[in-house]
Image 1 (cartoon, helix red, strand yellow):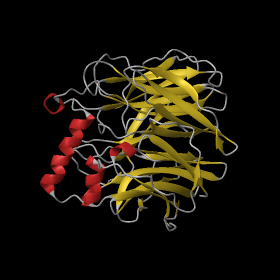
Image 2 (cartoon, rainbow, N blue to C red):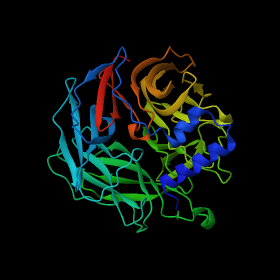
Image 3 (cartoon, rainbow, N blue to C red):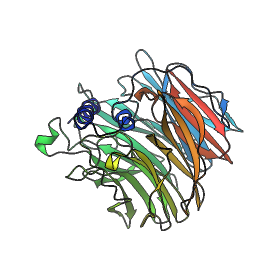
Length: 413
């Protein structure tokens, strides 16, 4: 199969040949490799003391069951370590170690995660090389049932032994000590995928606090190669939103639900008709509250890069018209949370001169939006990763990479 680096090179060639894709889309596909100096925060954001030290990368915010958790990887000479920290009384607590080991696969877009539930159970994920191929790696999971004091041994949820990609994970607590896990799975994809007809798939499984797996299996057999899925709880059960991939290379956002012991779907969230012969490395993000589901995503259909948002009032069975939320120079890397059943808070990366800027704004279900507010400047390089956002106890928290460190900030939504 083609690895992420090969796909990016292919995308670069496509952009140069067509010359019709905007500069903002070029940034999404190939990035900007120039490192940026430290960026000042913008009102109303306030810098927080980050719990992550030096040589840290790939921050991930997880807000579940009243707990806000920041996780990251500490790079080492012989091995890497997955740390996490809980937010307590507006401050990050002392870091705890979830896992450590050699031969980890650490990538700006394929981010490990630590998820919690209300009963003190924790599920963590990280990636380990499965052989000599650059993009051959396995998803590893481990579980704690006692607030992180002890952990199971790491285990692999997929049963194939192919040296292909297994990652881009989304974790979701579903109650009674159980989690749902969704990931991209390359078992049917080979290095000669165009000749063999193989493609990246989306798979899922349920795991309990003892590490027992159930219902592991495919959700969609053909999806975009490296766009992160987003799993959410609905009134009918878990749902996964992801970038689908048709035989004609249309890569729009789709949704599938777990209902009555099986997967239903996929169904389109919006028919953008974005045809692209390469992965944009930018998946959707979603949130739910009661019957309301909101999803945000990047698209460049019609060669117009933009960040769109859509509401559903029936757990994702149908969606309203997309609402454009960016300010005209969207790079993507969006996130979204619901403030209530009619109001969403969205963040994204906007191109500003030779760098980017993390911005946020409130969006109402009726389509009205407020003026965007800047949070911080940010490098447009791939190494800056995906800025994370989460709302907790009436405040919005941000985390992002800057060089070899992780920054965190807080603002009023």
